[in-house]
Image (cartoon, one colour):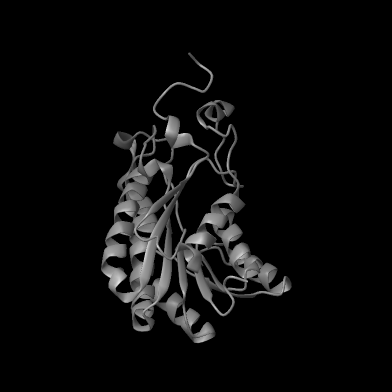
Amino acid sequence: MRFQDKVAVITGSTQGIGRGMARRFAAEGAAVVVVGRNQEKGQAVQQEILEQGGMALYVQTDVSQPRDVEEMVEAALRHFGQIDILVNNAGVNVGRGTPFFEMTLDHWRQTIETNLTGTFLCSRAVARHMISRRQGKIVNIASVFAFAAATGNAPYAASKGGLIQLTRAMAIDLAPYGVYVNAIAPGAIAIESAPEVPDVINDYILLRRWGTIDEVASVALFLASEESSYINGAVVTVDGGLMTLLPGKPLGTP
């Protein structure tokens, strides 16, 4: 197993892509710290991993709150003694579908504070520990919206674009200490909370289908493992070829 004796902190892991990653990391031998705001869902993920013979700890955390983050890291270290991997997956899209000129400041703040500030806070807290051990892997979950915006998506696109640059800046600052930082930019991924999107989007995806949670998790596992030993400061797009075609015409048109 790739992550035997490793500890992985995965934010936003009470559902969706985060939950899928938590299960996959646990199956590969990692002790997983499940992080999220919903206690019922978080405890369910913890129990699921434990019942499958893995190791897990749920810590209720709002990643936009500095005290919550510090207490989460302290709990992880107290329980498992180390942190080898951090996956910054927590994200929201408050006010989705609203034109930016009609959005409230609260819409903007909630999205930026969770997606971008939350990643900064969690990375800063965990990096101090990783620096002391001179090793570690950080994986940030961005989005194809970092590269191409859409109607009613201004705060989310801004947060994910900022996350790409934050990833690069973190990689530069942490490289001297043996800590790697990379990002994943998923495209259309089938999750339980995905909004209704017309099937026409498949006409812009080279693979003609939405991606799966496991397909994103597989890339996260790779970037968190020793197999990615010469990859740092990179962004891996997991979108079935969506960004290869956009902007442009649907597949099959002259």
